[in-house]
Amino acid sequence: MSDAALSRPRVAFPPNWPARIGFIVLIAYVAYASTILDFTWDRFMRGLGQGANLLARMFPPDFAADKMALLYVGMTESLQIAIIATVVGVLLSLPLGLAAARNLAPRPLAWAARALIALFRSLHPVIVAILFVKSVGFGALAGILALIVASLGFLSKLVAESVEEMSMKPVEAVRATGSPFLSVVIMSVIPQVIARFIGFSAYQLDSNLRNSALVGIVGGGGIGSTLLTAFQRFDYDFVLTIVLAIIAIVMVGEVLSGWMRRMFQ
Image 1: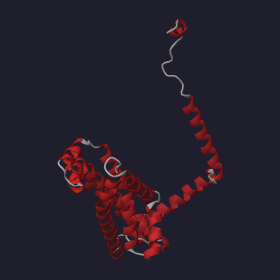
Image 2: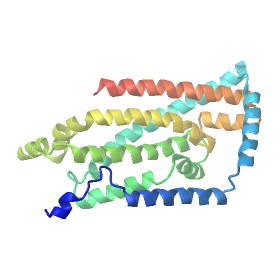
Image 3: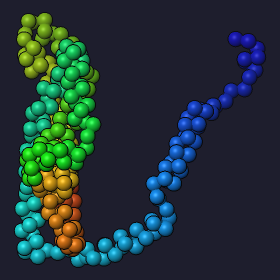
Image 4: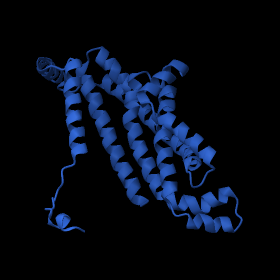
């Protein structure tokens, strides 16, 4: 190393000019997008006043017997939608995820499975629910199918990544015995990924509990349909009751999913 290089002072934290330029461009684009999307301070302040008026009309929540009967029916249907979609999605996502693992499946099969998973992940469950409502009509079936698609997109990708990260030594050992592919999967693949797969499934159940309300708003059945009807009737005190019930169910689902993840770690 030359004397000039040795005498040159070191910079402890050299400036990252590409990152700085990228940040400036991002800020400039945010400012530009705000000007063309009709985002104004006056409109924001008016929205705060209207929001306060809406909240005032929501209190106190309505716990009348006839409303609670509607809430029970809608919430029960949402729970059924979420549980059925999760179970079917879990059962279908395991083989699809194994097919998408590039260290286990043939390359053409793996890329075809990954393309299918990317297709499932490209659309929000609400958009998929709208498509199924147009196909099979209003009701719980459309919601179940939409959440199955969402579950497949999420779980299959995580299963494929878990399989690709596992150790191949147990797989090679079982293959050396001349075992068929199904035995290889059962004896060497499943034991390595089952704990993470159960954790992923528990999280997907929690996600489906939330999304069951969303798909119901567009006609997929469940508590979302009840919520939309209450909004259309300006029955805001009952809207608050429904929202509180949804929050309670989601919190219970979060506790259960956390318990399941701890049980199988």
